[in-house]
Amino acid sequence: MDIKDLTIKKVQEGLKGKEFSAKELTDEYLKRIREKDGDIGAYLSVFEERALKAAGDIDERNAAGESLPPLAGVPVALKDNLLIEGAVATSASKILEHYVASYDSTAVRKIEEAGAVVLGKTNMDEFAMGASTENSGFHPTKNPHDPERVPGGSSGGSAAAVAGGMALGAFGSDTGGSIRQPAAFCGIVGFKPTYGAVSRSGLMAMSSSLDQIGPFARTVADAELLFDAIRGHDDLDSTSLDLPELEPLKKEDLRGLRIGLPKEYFGDGVSAAVAKGVEEAVEKLKRLGVDFKDISLPHAKYGISTYYIVMPAEVSSNLARFDGVRYPGLPEVEKNAETLRDLYFKTRGEGFGAEVRRRILLGTFVLSAGYYDAYYAKAQKVRRLIGQDFDNAWGGVDIIMTPVTPTPAFKFGEKTDDPLSMYLADIFTVSANLSGVPALSMPVKPYPLGGKELPVGFQLMGPRLSDKKLLHIGKFYEEE
Ligand code: GLN
Image: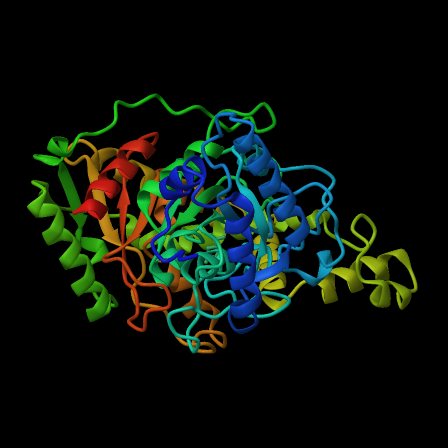
């Protein structure tokens, strides 16, 4: 079976026309995982039996003439911070190596109700903290385009699984760029929805006011179908909401569409490859009739400093629950603890990796008496200003376009000794999380599976709740 040009639409047609069965499709992907993932390391766990059973159920329904749900038979991968009842969920942390989830996340429940076949759980930076997947407590993941380079992070495993042809689609979480940056590094599409568009119930929380679940796919059309399956209000997450229904955009609507290019995103530090790539994308959109305007988002330069105060503050609180008592997972460490206090110290000290401990310390510091006003409270005020920049921009433009990352994928080890240089990988992505707006990362041009050239991405951001519009614009770009 040739999966090179496979899309969700082709899966729907193929199953309907009985060209292949869901089981054959799943088998093909499982085979590719067996052959390739030893080198790439995209997965932390693979569910052969469970996947084949789900595929078999779809085939039975198809044989009985039932109409199939939208993602029927679509083989997908899930980031390991999404809970599936009865399956190990580690968030790539040693402290949760043996933790088995006791309920399904809402997103996973919806994905399975839509008929998708879950192939397994993917590698990530520990608790989603990082931009290269080098912070995984288990192993790094390689970029399928160049094994000497990182796939990005923190959802690097999900991106590599799709780019390496080891899943047709995948899901990840994006707190400061963790879907968009790995998508750009791996030459695929990644989408961070409006804050609240997807329920966070059953997503292990990193920074609750920033986290969003979203899809990875090889095309925007596929990303939209994956997103449609998971979005919507959920009683289990009071921040979740329904998007307004939108008439599908027509190609003619792109004529006169106003896209802003913020000058703060095109200055020093943007590599020639990225600058050239974004320019190519601008030219292509111009051919579709889009008008471009230079704009300014004056507070964008404070994005990283604001994010690296707000995020660790929430991390320090969210990660307080993990210890050897509520989450026993380190029997060797627990055995050596002499007192209860010792048990807490040892399990948290040894179970968490260096980056996670660093952020818990930073977060505790910025929230502590005497520093709270100077750091945390001030960062919240700047966060508001960053959001207001966007609100002001929507007066003059419909959409904002920027690079996703300053450079294409970097090499292993290049940034591990200097956490600040790693943090700067998020310079163009954090503002969307701080302000809650939707953001789509797409490759400048389509990349063949395992191609040798390094991919470059560009980012489209729109007003809150404009998710579908962004995706429709992306689809026209892709067709062009
Ligand atoms: N790379 C960013 C960080 O390290 C973003 C992480 C994310 O979006 N989960 O925090």
